[in-house]
Length: 77
Image (cartoon, rainbow, N blue to C red; front, side, top):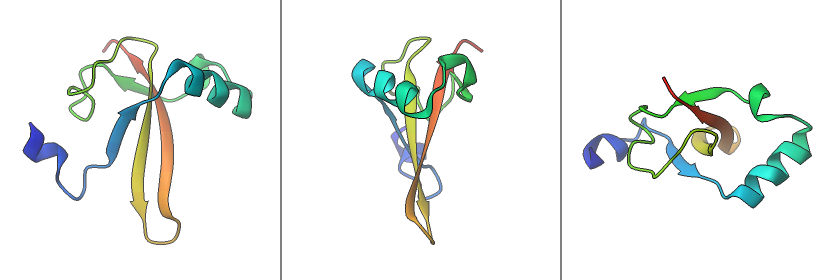
């Protein structure tokens, strides 16, 4: 699995802390229901110790911005 995650086209996935999650929700004035979803079984996060309701930060390389951050909430799927 490590080989798939180290590929250049696979963005970095990391679980954020509960305090970071709360700050994110407050900053954007959203609830967990309004954040895009990611399946708990997704290959990009299988190596992380995640549970339903955790928030994953995805950092993608960008030729214009350097890096772009996206957030997903973990769901059963």
